[in-house]
View 1 (cartoon, helix red, strand yellow):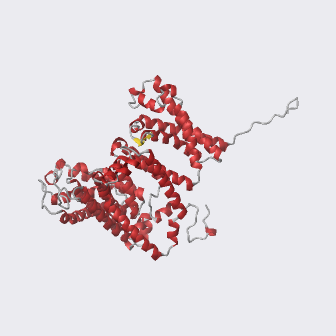
View 2: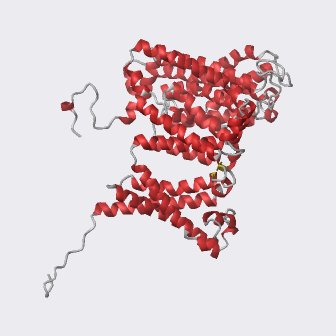
View 3: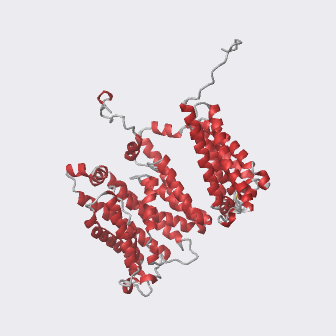
Length: 575
């Protein structure tokens, strides 16, 4: 109280928790600004700006730019205590992210950034400021604040509303990327009017975007209300099996017609996906079940490919001129024997040491097949050419080209999947899982480690050899340059993304990591960037994979302080 009797109130203090919250908001906004500048200067935003997503409305580059401003707002709103604070946090984070772009425009008007950053061009500044140049440098900050607040408000929606909206927006994005191809296929199928209504030459039309969004959102809400999964789970086991059969038949029919529906542009992609599914099922035994990280998987792929090349080629290095079907068993057998030869010396080591050893063997094989030592047998850098297709049909036949390879690879993949499924539940499969969980305990209960691991290694090698044999027939040749470490990395990655030890996960992983990147050949310069970002996001938000096995899901989602199911809660160990 002052001398004249006035009451003075003490200033409100800000709690340490609140200060920490705003510090995190600022950090998120600044990180988002750095990412937005990176996307602009690396060329993604200006390059994609020429690619319409929704015709006459928004381009792919503008979509990437707005998303880079919206994501910081959604991230900043996640830890807010009230909706009002969440929206304010999102606006501040978006303002900081957009403010970084404002600084980029101002800096570009003062300093010639293009001297060392080619994409810092007047066209980029015009895109960021709606054509106003430095006079509109405030626009990115304002747009960032608006997008951040909008993303924060969107995050506050209940999941039953947010999930359908996200699916609707993603559907527009995905279909917009393939709009031209889908329009072409609909026109070829006699549905030209529908194709022109939904899709433009690049992207989707405004009408198509509205119809796609409403259809996906409405279907998702309807599915939530009806809850097919909950009703299915309440049915008896016999009835569930009866319902699964027509569903599986429908999936098989769709997979069989896929190359014909999508046309020749997609036939090679689908055949490549089928090949990686086949090899992924083989490595899923070695890595997913037995826990043996094999980075030299491409060595067995090479053995299968070169075996088929030597036995079937009609060119210089062909030996027996056998048909493809007679050469495949030899390719599988030689790959399996090669797996035994390589496996015996190294399967006594564990963990990262095993991965490095297998990586070394893969590189040795790559160098050997291109060396002068085996040049007289394998052709050296010239490789082996004129490998015939498995089925000799006229070029006008629908089985000509990669379509027949797709069917052959899918047939073998289904056979391998059946074998892997039967093995997983067998005594041998349980021994593999025991070795994966703890080798010392597995050995203590009587499992022969070397013998059991060698069987897994040989089976994985056999399936890799089968994949190499089919791949050689697909391309019609095999060269040392085809034996790349990236093949092994891709097979390992698709297993991790799909779910360790999960057979359906191999199919999903191959689709996401092999099929989708192959379809984005027009963005060739940035494919590996997006590939890496997708892997990082998977490891951060869904480390168990997209379709993990039950064991892996329980391992990653049971809290550490939760007692095992057979231990009473009162007997929990002190922690």
